[in-house]
Amino acid sequence: MIAPLLAIETSCDETAAAVLDRTDDPARPWTTLANVVASQTAIHREWGGVVPEMASRQHVRDICGVVEAALDQARLSPADLRGVAVTQGPGLVGSLLVGVAFAKSLAWSLGIPVVPVHHLAGHIESLVLAHGELPLPAAILVVSGGHTSLYSVREPGQYELVGRTRDDAAGEAYDKVAKLLGLGYPGGPAIDRVAREGNERAYDFPVARLTHADRNAPGPTAPEGLLPAGIARRVDFSFSGLKTAVLRLVREHAGAPARGKVIPAEGLHAALSPQQVADIAASFQRVVVAVLLDRTFEAARWLGARSVGISGGVSANSRLRADAAERAERYGLPVYVPPLALSTDNAAMIGAAALRKYAAGEAGSLDFNAEAALAL
Ligand code: KG4
Ligand code: ZN
Image (cartoon, rainbow, N blue to C red; front, side, top):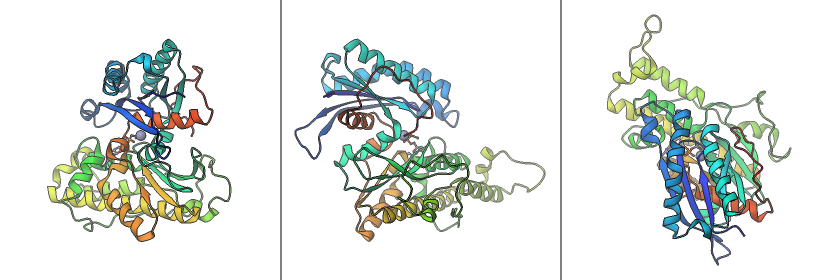
């Protein structure tokens, strides 16, 4: 048993530490004693996005304080710990290395096991940490700044990829459109906020329909036949066309000439009124949320799912949450989302995934390294 467990997450621009312990309740075996996040958004905002070099340096500055704060909150000292969990990948390699080196050193000095965790397994297990085991099989959408992927979960802890984005992740599209509209970084929360003031029917943005197999696709992990071939294509995502449509519209509004002088994309929003910005944000969000939910519920139907889960940073979106609840009602299929603190990157979810792995006999050794493109 590796609880109490310290978990560490440093895959992108949040330095996070959490402490998890066991409970006596078999339906909810784990409880979160502390969940601390030091966000770097104020640092990266100035640059309009995450600067990897600055992110890793800031992780180095923050990691000791964040771990100490988590232990303090949990009223534990390092000697009380029975295990350490850490995000191994995917993510920014310089950022991952800080967490991995810290976790390995601490575990080695305390003589306790360290469990490497896949970041997306963390996002999936955030649902179980919050709600207990979901009714299986489950269709789970992980939607964040780096990923938009659909998984079939037939057995606890077994994640089979059934659909994914062919270009941008949904969170990435939110961030790019927000930048174009002059809403700053990170874009998701900003669009979520201004969209409430906008008319979501003001603009009719296109929805990409995918009918052909993706020739550049990495091999799916789902066994052949889990989804019929035609459906397997239909539950993929694509957001780059939508992003281009927004850019084209903003250029038109800005009166940018088709030829000749080109205004840089970042300067275009100056020509938009606040109402136009809100209308574009609301119309963009309507399409993104509809596509995410259409594909997820279509996959759920074909998978015979008994529940749907939605996790990752974009699952914090208020419109996505409201519409998901409405569809849950309409289809009589329970939909689970994490509480806000477990939606965006955090370490509690990494701890939950590590406890699952360890219980399945995947013990930690020190023999692993950070992997920027780790496969699930
Ligand atoms: O999971 P996460 O914290 O980090 C990654 O693993 O990528 O997700 C971050 C992403 C960002 O793109 C951010 O804009 C988006 O989640 N996000 C949102 C909201 N809050 C965060 N997107 C839409 N609406 C939100 N309320
Ligand atoms: Zn994430």
